[in-house]
Image (cartoon, rainbow, N blue to C red):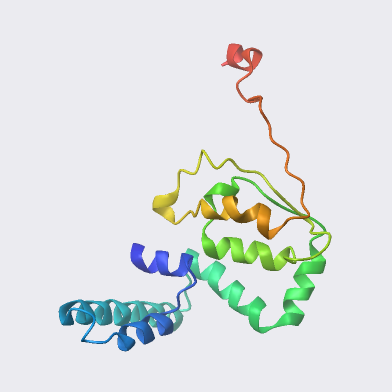
Length: 166
């Protein structure tokens, strides 16, 4: 299940996984590895079908289906882009690929005046084991060049008067 979660974090659908497994050439890849990948791809597909058949979604589905909806239905995307005047993402270093894609869609990546603010510290990415992609914060500036960067050099959470209260 954690592997399927990672697939969803990377926006890999069961159909894409199946197609990849089927595309592997026996000349270039160990046949046992191909069989293993096909088995995992089929399990992922079955898992997803079981969720749908039982009218369930897991956490990764909440993001991936939203992304798919916005990518396929531009009128719905526009509605939500206009609904939110500003978007703020805290702990941005802990976002995964799919979450960042969602943020970029909502914030109109490439817009001359994006309505986006993120807060993050590339030295504190601690959720890689849950799919967090520190590359999101590292490439953010180049993907949103019009946004200003403010670097805080003082830790306001651990001032002496706050520590004295603890």
